[in-house]
Amino acid sequence: MDEFFQLDTITVKVNEKHIKCAVMEYSAAKVKDLREFGYTDLTEESVQESVWRIVKGEKLTDVIDHFIKDDIVTS
Image (tube, rainbow, N blue to C red; front, side, top):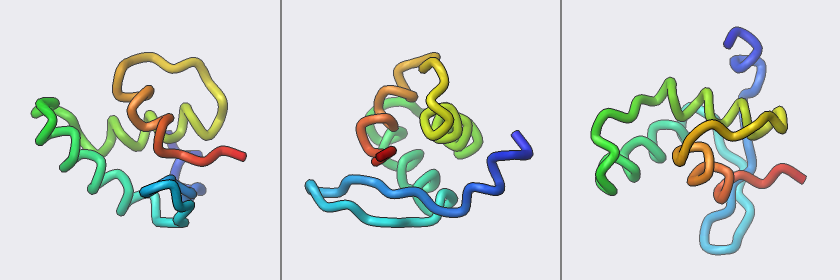
């Protein structure tokens, strides 16, 4: 996970607009959003791990990865 912290910003889709934001800000916002959706045990660390998998093009491992994949602009 040490490599993750080299990733400071990502680009996400918000209302069809591409916005660059800090990974930590995105993680906090996504945790809040998904906890309201019913994922009450979700942590910022697990969201950050999902972000890292998606950015690196690794295999998605759970439903959270898929939610996050829909947000992140990778190309």
